[in-house]
Image 1: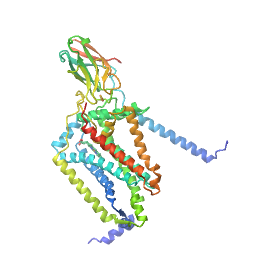
Image 2: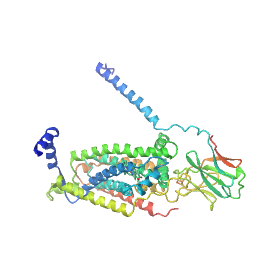
Image 3: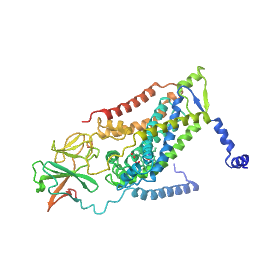
Image 4: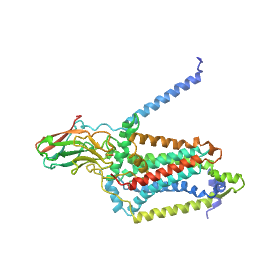
Length: 356
Length: 152
Ligand code: HEM
Ligand code: FES
C-alpha cells in the first residue's frame, strides 16, 4: 500500500507544496460586467501552446529546403495519417491566435487596464503581438508555394526602408539579395527556434506581471465601488475561473477542428520564380490594413507613419495621466475606437476594393 | 573638477571596458556570419535565356538571372535572329519586388501587384514604381540568346 501522506510530505519538504496550495486557494479574479474580456489572455495562451504542440508534430516531417519543402507539406497533407488535420489546426489556430491577441490588446486598451502600475504588462503584451505577427510572416513562407514566395518578396522588401541598415537588414532576412532557398531555411530557423524562444520568455514575464499585480478593474467599475453603488466581487481562480477558461479552450478547439475538417488548409502551387505575380496579391489579413494604406500614401510616409504610430501606441499608457488618477479618459477611448475602426475599415477595403 | 578616481573604481572601469571589448569581439563575427558570402562565380553575369525561335514577335518570357527573375521580350514585328530586336531587363518590380510580365495586348511590361506599367526600355509609364527596371544586354551566339548585365 502506498502511503499518500508520506509521498506528500516527502515532496512538501522539498518544494513547499503547502505554500503553493495556499497561493492557489487565495488567487481570485474580479467579477463584474466587463469581466468576460479577462478570458482573452488565457485564450491566447492556450492557442500559443497549441501552436507549439502542432508545430512540433509538423517538424517530424517538414523539410526546410526549396527543393523539398513544398513536397514535404504535400506529403503531410496527403500521406501522413491525420497530417491534414495537424497542419490545418496549426494554420487555423495561427490566425485565430493573432486575432485573439489583437482583440485582447484592444479590450485591455479600452478598459484602461494598462494604467498604473501595469504599464510594463502593456509594453510586454505589445511586443508579444509583434512576435505573433513575426510567427505568421515566417510561417507563411514555409510551405514554399507561389503566393508565399511573392508575399515574402514584397514583405522583406520593406526592410530597405530602414535608414542606414536597410540593405543589411534585407540581406539578413533573405539570406542574400533575393528570396531563395536560403530565405526559406532562415525563416524556418526564426519560426521554430528564435521566435518560440523569445516568445516563451516574454510570455513568462507578461504572465508574471499579471500575477504580481492582479487583474485590473475598469475605471468605471472602480468608481462605482468607491461610491458604494457596486460591490467588489471576485471568484476563486481554482477551480471556478480555471474551469470557465478551459470551457473556452475546448470550444475554440472544437471550432478549429471543425474548420480543419470541413476546409483543410490549402497548399497552392509550388513556388516558381519564372511565374509573374498574379493581380490583387495581398499579404495575410493581419498585414492588410498597412498594405492597403500604402496604396494611398507614398511608401516612405506610410512605413515611417506606421513605425511611429506603433511606438506611440506602446507608450500611450505613460501619457494617460487621467486614467492613472482613476478618472475616466474620453480622449483615450476615442483614440482606441479610432484605431480599431481604422484597422477594420482598411482591412475590408483591402479585400473588397476592385483592383485596378 | 579633476577628482582622483579611487583604485577600486579604476579597476571597475578596466573590467567594464574589457567586458565591452569582449562583447564587441563576440558580436562582430556573429553579425558578419549572418550575411552569406557572395556566391562564387556570380561575377559572370551572363546567362543563356532562351533559344532562337522560343519567342515569336510580341512575346515575352521570364528566365532565371542568377537568383532573380528577368524578362526577355521580342519586339512586335521583330526578327527572331536579330539581337537588337530583343530587349531584356530585370523582372523584379522596383516598387515592392513583385515579378512583372509582358502584356501582349498593351505591348508593355506590366506589374500586376499594383498596376505598374513600363515601356520596353524599362521606363515607368504609370503606376507606383519609383524607378525604371534595370536593362540587360542581349547577344545571339549560334542558336542561343545570351543576356548580360550592363554592370558586369
Ligand atoms: C504563435 C505561434 C505560431 C504561429 C502563429 C505559427 C504560424 C504558422 C503558419 C501561418 C504556418 C504556415 C501554414 C501553412 O500554410 O502550412 C506555419 C507553418 C509551420 N510551423 Fe508554425 N506557427 C507558430 C508556432 C510554431 C511552432 C512553435 C513551431 C515548432 C516548434 C512551428 C512549426 C511550423 C512548421 C514546421 C511549419 C511548416 C509546415 C506547414 O506549412 O504546414 N510553428 N506556422
Ligand atoms: S510591386 Fe510592382 S507595382 Fe507594386
